Length: 194
Ligand code: ASP
Image (tube, rainbow, N blue to C red; front, side, top):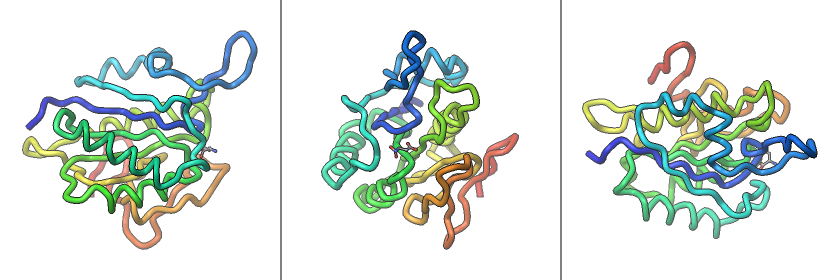
């Protein structure tokens, strides 16, 4: 199996916003700023490479061309990484997860989408937990193989099957549901995989 490296693609959305200390305006981060805001990433025992959409996009602008681009990015990097995390705006995350689950045929590695309700640079952000846990899930293995070899959304506490997920709330951290399929994992003190 490949060395344990995780590939993070940041497409845009709220998770990537950071307050400019001088102007107070919210601006998009670059991944180095993100590492700076989440020093905990250093404690993870594997390498994280990243790619950032330039410019980052609000997920309301997502379309099938971008889904193709994301599938291509995963395809191009497939052999070199253990798992993939896609940072995405929440508004259309469920659509992208669903489309990717059908585009990435015979997938045998994790592709975990996550985002956040509050920007990563804000004190009460949910982005930090969501990102760290999504990366841990993308790196989880059993008998040397990825534990979650499919397209999922991780948000707040639950890992949900990508093509069974809907956004149900714009105000709460607990923003996604899977109405017709149980959660695949629950992240409390431990991440419990079902
Ligand atoms: N409008 C943003 C987006 O979907 C909202 C978010 O990220 O939560 O890109």
